[in-house]
Image (cartoon, rainbow, N blue to C red; front, side):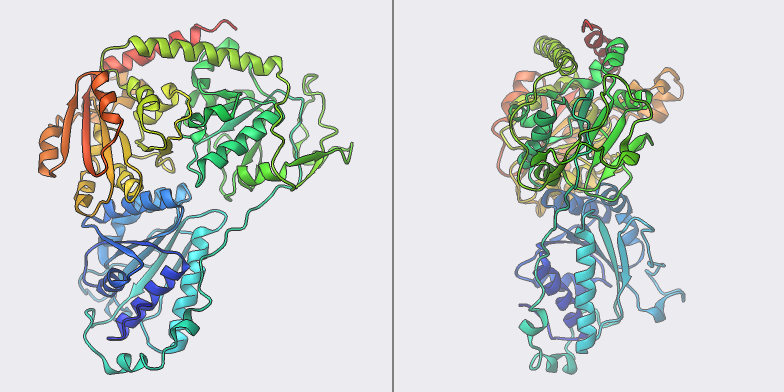
Length: 617
């Protein structure tokens, strides 16, 4: 126990740090500043909290986001007063939109120094708008026991809010009066003799998560149905994949597995895995034949634009399985949200008891028209939470076989094409990574073109690679810093990124002196925004090249010298494979592939169409 009794501010801040540590906090990311000095001192001297100093607030926030995303536990993010906190905003929006727990602590001036031209003072009340799940401004520090109890209980409540069924950001604004440094004060020192720490902190323990469970199985068992496994970063990837596999095999439904999901990396668990659905759906004749009556979507909507358009056109009945309370249907379809996790739902679907021939809650899921192939929704059984679904595989159907045949043909075509592709086409990088990285490697995938290449080309296998990403808002903000947060104190990790995303966050390299572990950065340098070459704006130049592609003409070898980083330019695919396995144990390394942006865009336009047309429906 580490309460600092030197003065009022040190008591207040150290009670705060001790309370958070007992709740489960292990890491605090601290930006420099004067007003936040009591907080910095308290966290820096706590023996059970890793305190990491970061110069740039924007980078610090994304680093904390990466840590919290990997650990599924809140990370404390601390800054001084004024505009320092404003630099947290992009990462806070991302954390809020992707349900990542963060505890944001902004130091502030006391009330008497606000609105009077005092330096480094802005209005910090609800600085981050509606994005935090909870906000509180603490009272000024006090050493009275009722006030210390108020501090403790406020922290417990906010910690719980950050970790609830839908995790997210909580913001605590903390005003401090001078002295901000630990100058001795006799009344605070006197408190040490009477303060009973175990009585005060005795009830402060980590919170135990409570799983929700579904009460009924609403899915028609004889319909043309699919399971869509969207973007997901589960705490236990294998358990998550097993749960979806149980659903798939028991219901006899194919699983359309997003590239930013762990399912493709536990492929042998699921015989009905479909990884090339984006390309399958580009064959419009086949897409019409594959139109589903029922969609069970686990988590967020996948990246694929083709999939979204297909669902919008076919308008199937949808169930979304996700524990959060967010609206996860951007298509505004006929959707019911089952607020539970895939794991809990699979456990609840343990035994289908034929207890009733009456339809369950028909007003909630009765279709607008009953197609003959649906066969009605009667006879759906009530279920009981008595273990996992039976692992017995549901008999195959012509509908399922159509999906599997198409997927097999396209996967074979992709593999053949990639095997003989010798030029440094950036899409082949994702294909190679799926087969070359050490088992279990944490892989952070940057937004824009890398996430789409993973979606198109990532080959299923049993590598247990862990994909990480920032898809809450889909921006390139903080890519490097988030990846470093994922890799800190973790297995040697990899970042797949484009040049613009890396350049947007080069201040993240300032973390190198405090980073523990290894990160290999696979840098696709096509000198600009490659994704824009896939969009209609590419046909309009000017202004396309200058204002959309925005080439920066950066020498990354020189950039790496500035930060004393290991650098290597990759010239061949065999060279890349050799550098990916094994990975180093420490440091930051950049492997740069220089590619032709325009040629890569032409390759995708040409080959994606060929892959889609190669299927005979």
